[in-house]
Image 1 (spheres, rainbow, N blue to C red):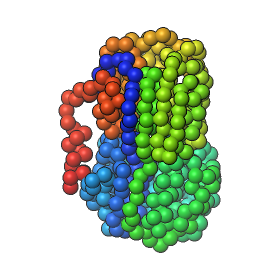
Image 2: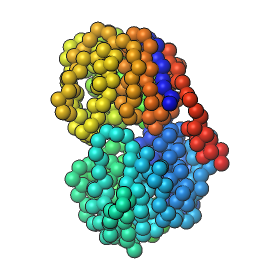
Image 3: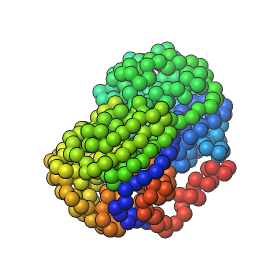
Image 4: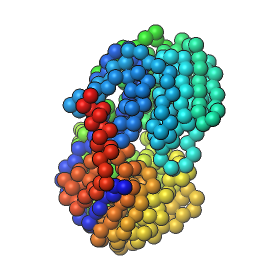
Length: 431
């Protein structure tokens, strides 16, 4: 299994460019199934999850070809074939093909999705929304199925502003008969990017980025060109790594508006942060000040940066409290951080971090994507050699993480034991 070896600590210094947002690219790839014609998608990140989604939509009738910085997706007809279980179970975002399939073919059937082991993430909100739009929904033998001759508009209130449910219902509604209103909708930038893509296909979508989204169904959608927004989580990871190592780093290809909660917290921790039009520059002049934070849906502090933030706070000059409100099992990195010398006490969804003077290198295991990112940040701060094992989790959300950190001066190498991922990507990209 691949692992990342870090010899630290070294203050990070220099410039780095964030790639396209994984959490925007995945629903946009799924939404390409709605269009008759060709979509040219630029700034698509080279990630394991993207490769998986490409394989899923390819099996449903999409034809894929690589572009210089993206993917060309051509869809003439869509079949209602069940995506392979091994693909769907490894990535929760596979459920996002249900909305397009139901809208385009009248039937969607997939194995129940998997993904990172960060707690229960049921898809009941997706299914309730489909049911409200006229679909018959059933669950049996580890599969979920929805059927409808044609969906109709509906008023849907989400019990929680779920990003995935909002995206799936948006995609289902664009070809439905009449108007669909989604209340308590997620407001994440990735929702807005999906809406922008749907509009470019000819959809009628209003209100994305607010709690109420209104969609009037149309008869058909066409191909279009679209550039995926920058990845605010990748950008935030580099800023937190710079903060934790007392570095001086500029992150480019950033939408600063998407980073407000992170920037505010970094300043509270003592970092000097300058925000440009498409960049954020951070200088950390001394030891991190402790802080308390809670994760919330956007525009709150993102749960996907909770693990890197906790890593930084392990060296803070005092006690910090981190409360996780989004996922109930997203502290699995805490025990691994303690192997590096961190002092952390757990109480349900609350972690109390007592800052210490030093972390020491050790072998740790990435249990999921974001936990892995947190352990890499901790390794950059620790004295000696840190091996972050099960580094394949990082391939789901970071393109060449080790290479980009090396450009910032970090002593980081990735050790591979096979070239499986590279082969999969080249098969898609070079077709």
